[in-house]
Structures are given as structure tokens and as C-alpha cells.
Length: 364
Picture 1 (spheres, rainbow, N blue to C red):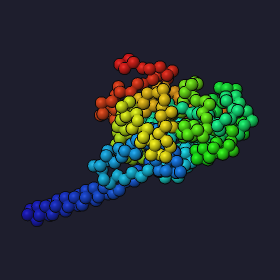
Picture 2 (picture 1 turned 180 degrees about the vertical axis):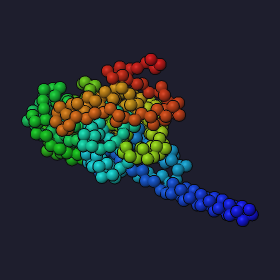
Picture 3 (picture 1 turned 135 degrees about the horizontal axis):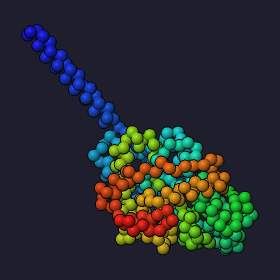
Picture 4 (picture 1 turned 90 degrees about the horizontal axis):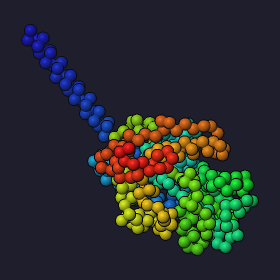
């Protein structure tokens, strides 16, 4: 009896030691460094590793993620900025080189059409305008004057579809122009040297105009709201599934940055921080002129954003920018955003809009 009891005690102790060893092994494995790779579908002037004009850009510049993840030292965030914009980001996603990205609507739709498994988590850089710029003194004064002209359009970016829609609204198609696919730096240089007749683009064009190096003759701000561009935080579906806590922390940080970026008292500071990208603060002032920071920096994925993506996907197919239909159902995951808003007391801070673009009254 005593022998049996002794054997029982030995086995019990051995089992406890084994369980403890396995527990220690599990803990050490869980504390191994986790690299979180975040990409911007943009780069600063001269390929500077900064972006501007969005809450995500503020989150990067002001180290919001570092603060949010301070108690998780095993999580290491790596930032990348892609001169090749959305197409380059999609390539990085396809090659499993990114976990998250700040990217515009059209390249995201193209990526989904090509089979990328992603989730859209929040808006950052929504409701953005597109401009048409020409060299100083150009005879081109309207979109209709572009027929037969050399025009820069950065293909595959969210400026691309906005430009195509604006052209169509004024009776033109891409084939009516001599379209040249150029990135931001190439476009700016070509406008200054007059190697092109015009260019569609965003806030860097406003910086050129402010210096007297180009003229902006058209803005989608003064045209149909359907020409707006939207950018969002998009993530590899596999990463979100494997690391929900880290995903939540990243969303938390960007929502905090969005709150700061939405306060009118921070307007000038927002522009000055954005100028770290190498593009002048005056360009960002022009870009946001006539619009509330809350409107442009809202993180909400509301019904207007969802409907916009449905419409963008449909039009991208109609204009031949993608070769197959894209279903946006199930693509958006608002659960992380909802938790971040609730935990920060921001559930009703930003205005939500319905599918028709009308403001939704809270509580209805």
C-alpha cells in the first residue's frame, strides 16, 4: 500500500513538473518578437519616409502606436512608405511582406479582384478631393480642354478612378487623352518643365500651385460628391485572425490620433506635422480648405463608405480598371473600431452618414 502511494506521489510530482515545463515553454514562445509590418501607399517628397494629411500619418509621426503598445515589448512595429503607391502595396501584400496598410479605395478593390484576402478596419483619409493642375499660363482651363492633351494620371491609385469619373462627367474618356502613367515626383517635375499639359492628383499639386509653379483649374470639391476618394486601414485577414489583441491595439491608436486630428484647435499643428512629409503645409491647408477636420479625419466605416465602395467596385468594372466583379460584402470588419470608439468614449463623436450621404441623427 505504501509502495503504491509512493509511486502515486512520484507520478503526481512528475506530472506537475512536466506541466510546469510545458507552461514555461508556452510562455517563452508567446513572448517571441512579433513584427507588425505597416505600409503607407505614399511616400514623402524625395521618397521621405513620412506621409501627411491623415490620422494614420499623425499616428506614425507622433508615435501613437509606440504608446499604445508600450506594455507589449515583444511587438515590434515596422513602417514602410511606398513611392509606387497602391499598386506597390498590393504587390507587398501578395508577397506577404505587409500585415497592414493605409491605402486608397481603388487599389484595394483591384487587390480584392485579384484574390487578396484582406479586411478593412477603419477609415483614415476619407472624403479626399482630386485636382487637375496645368503649367502656369496654360491655355487649358477646363476638363473639356484636355482632349488630345498629354495628361498625367497615376494609374491604379485612388486618384485614377476619381479622374476617370471626372472625365466621364465632362464628356471624355481616357482614350480621348494621351495618358501618361506617372508617380507624384515625376508628375511634379513634368508640370514644372512643361513636358505634360496637365495632371490629375492630390495635395502635392496644391503645393506646386502655392509656389506659382502650376495652376489648379479644377477640384472635385466643387463637383459631384461621388468623385471623392477614400482611404482606409486594411489588414491581412490571416493576421487579424491570428492576432486580434494586437489588431485592436493598432485600431485603438489610430482612433486616438483621429480624435486629435479632428479637433479644430489642432488644425495648424495638423498641417505642420503633415509637412514633415516634405510637402508644404500650405498644400495641406489648401487641401482641407472649406472642410471640417472632423469630416476628413473621421475613422467611421458608415453606410456612406460602404455604399461608396460598392459603387467604386461597380464603376471600376465598367471603366475596365478591373476584369471581374468585386463583392464588398464581408470585407469590412467594424468590430475593432466599435470597441475602440466605446472604450475611448467616442461612439457619437463623429457624424455618421447613410448610404445616400445624408447625416444620421444619433439614436435613430
